Length: 134
Image (cartoon, rainbow, N blue to C red):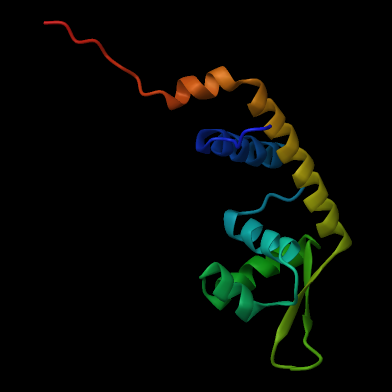
């Protein structure tokens, strides 16, 4: 039975994933943009600017700026809701789906690399002890 990764291992996976995203040729998303992107792609249902702002506990203008960038990169697009023309729906794109697939691959590689070095993770988690002599 596989054990759950520790908090230190998860942080290591996050670090390795972010570094891989920054190094590769492709979109470089901020934490907010990545949060909006992942919310749209991982949570089912229709997403609106208002709903995303509530889910992420940030302002509607912050969501709008994040969606502007995601739209520039063709990772998401906005469409007026035909049922309520005051509301804007966020739609997934083919390029966004491909980005999510790449992100999953990068994270899987980071998780495997982290799993291969358990001794290093254990050393980092253990508190250091200094011997003081008088």
